[in-house]
Length: 537
Image (cartoon, rainbow, N blue to C red):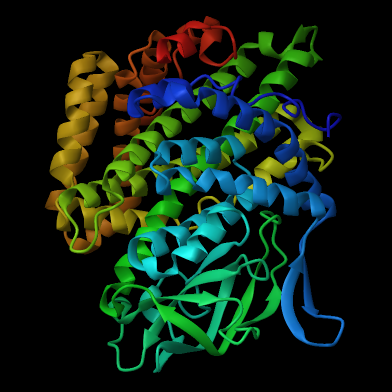
């Protein structure tokens, strides 16, 4: 892969200009994990980066439906290298459940970034999460999952419903100490790899709609050792090929109720919030990898008698990448910090939990937009060869396209943002936190951001429900952008203050980046401002 990628073989933690400052801001004592992050950065830029490319192009998972004796097993065959890496990556899920912090998990997920490889760990993490909080009697399964000896999944999507979980039709029928599931799931990531799946189903007699949906834990093998569900087929996907996704049939599958049936929809939404944070971290990680590819390309390539980096328009695009990634990453790790403080809360939820949800919605939606734009812009900076699959940048652009869709597209995030802002009361603390940060920054751009934040919330309060929904997506962008500006100022470094000003000018004022940024190489060039990482310590 060294002939197809500029970023391969480099330590992606060592090249990271923003994450150290964010970890320093939100995670006390993170420096004790610096060596761990350095080692993981080498893996992310080395073996994992190569393996993701190898699986995508040459070693997709294959569904093996029968064993040598003709028995149904519905198991995927993976590249042996991926089998080894999957087990190694299981370590990123352990910290929150072993006395550590969610910051470490999401920092590693960001450095890894590959949506297929990270998805396997994300859906396994969600399974661990549900067992840890609501089904502790299956602690032995949790330990298998954390050790990389087994993998989990979250199977909610049905063909008639998609994001509309209230339309789910899979039935759950009690039978002694267990339940039996009947129906099918249409998009099941981890199909053929999963050992323990979280599955949504409607108990017999439960009401229609989302509040009638319960959550179940379904093992691959039933209590007698037989195959407990069947994989109908795998999907042929544009990207994310490292995670096998397929269709799953339940024909009396043995299942175990998680927690209380009437609270199932809340457990499902908790796992969705967790996965949305992973989606945000992954989107920004893909954007960073694309930026690195473009940076090293622009340093090595000569056109019209000068290195690409010396041309003003190339510098403008590199600045654009740096601004988007810094803002999106700051929003992501503020959302992670809120989640780290609220994740152990249970229904009925407190305002702190709803606030964490709000930040997750904003981060998920906005980072997906930034991530897809950044990978496409980086591919454009390669010229025609960027569109050729020989080069790593082409795959990054394909991979990023899933991030706006997974875990609820932008329309769903916008509707959920309205709900948590006004029905759950998150608007007031949101305005207070970010208004305070922007007032403290005191710059013209900070005042602009504060004004846009306040006007957007005030305007939404005057609208009918339908009008608010019509404008919700643009309102989400404005609120996310104002928050990103505040968070960049809050980091307290000169570089991040410059990035904050540029972010406000471009995304909240709608203007081209000012020309003073033309000579500001430190904004986008790794190593041009060594003090950034030092300040973070």
